Amino acid sequence: MQNIIEPFRIKSVEPIKMSTRKNREFYLQAAHYNPFLLPARDVIIDLLTDSGTGAMSSEQWAGIMRGDESYAGSISFQRFEKSIQNIMGFKYVIPTHQGRAAERILFSIMCKKGQVVPSNTHFDTTRANIEFQGTEARDLRIPEAMDPELLHPFKGNMDLDKLQQTIDSVGKENIPLIMVTITNNSGGGQPVSMANIRGISEIARAHGIPFYVDACRFAENAYFIKLREEGYARKSVKSIVKELFSYTDGCTMSAKKDGIANIGGFLCSNDEQLADKEKDLLILTEGFPTYGGLAGRDLEAIAIGLNEAIEEDYLRYRIRSTQYLGDNIASAGVPIMQPPGGHAIYIDARSFLPHIPPHQYPGWSLACELYVEAGIRSVEVGAVMFGIHDPESGKDVTLPELDLVRLAIPRRTYTQSHIDYVIEAIINVYRRREKIKGLKITRQTQYLRHFTAHFKKL
Ligand code: P61
Image (cartoon, rainbow, N blue to C red; front, side, top):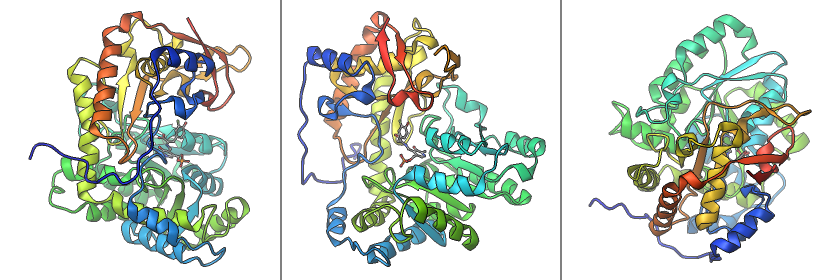
């Protein structure tokens, strides 16, 4: 069969409130042209994120009921720990309330002022947590990743020559750890190959530098390895995942992605002394080491979700359905980051709206336009998210190389007809793209300004 269907039946539904274009123009103006400030009930299809927005399975809901809420030694923690040890192979597992809490604990122990943490691309919370320690977060992606149209199977790869040069120039003692984000979220949801992971690991081990994975979308990355990397077609996703983590010393994880849970995260390592230090910090800000800021029921949902995320029927549907959106808009001429990523499609907004200069935020304008057109909420990954401004004048001093709009697909949440509606809307906006105008920021904070900034239409 050519058709790949959603490998699940729908048992419980959540109504969507429909709206008119006029309604949405009003809602967006009231939200100061910032889609983050829209009430979710005024959104028809919410593609803002795939984080915590997936649909849980009946097994996960059953696990929620089984949750053991004991303060210490909860059985749910034992299931959580065992599930992660089985899938990823790490010895020490520390639960946290989400991914960024794992990052904060790890970096506050490992990083010192003036040091450098190389990565393929640090996600924004990772970068912010590293920089908060006075450490530099350095992105070392391969040059192919910078060309949105170029087809390359593993555009998430780290540039190994640049990694070696970085170690040579700053000194191994100034690199507390090396990280790699799988799949590379800020770089277009692109996967990292096993060969690249192995290469980073060899370099890291040769210099005695710990190697960590930002594992948020590890299952999707493993499926891409199965599909695209020589020698892996016949291997199970489970064995690919195991092999991948065997080259590393630990990971940070947001269970809101490939844990298919609504909340949660964890931090793993094989180093007992380090794990003890991490637990001390955990107790200070998250909770006792057998719950770490989560309810027992959340631990259950994650333990089950991680196993469902590596099921191959699920992953086949997941990767193909994201590709379906990408291929359909690309064949209508819409410029997207190629090839389609695992959890999201990224529209190249600078090519979509070449008449809007980067300092007038083409990505943000496009995200606003998709909302007005069809009630679709997406997220800009570009000049607003990554631009650096002078706090005195409010003027941007550095802008990133790309302006993308991310359409992130929540797991098991929308059907093909929802996606067909999204495709139609994007093509409609593309046809009238010349009429779209840029924006100006009227209010912003110093860090992570995209969450709260106010805008005015130009
Ligand atoms: C997302 F607009 N991602 O993609 P936490 N690493 C990686 C992530 O993708 C990630 C985290 C660490 C989100 C949520 C999000 O400005 C934003 O559990 C590769 O969210 O703490 C999260 O995991 C952090 C969206 C986060 C944003 C920050 O949509």
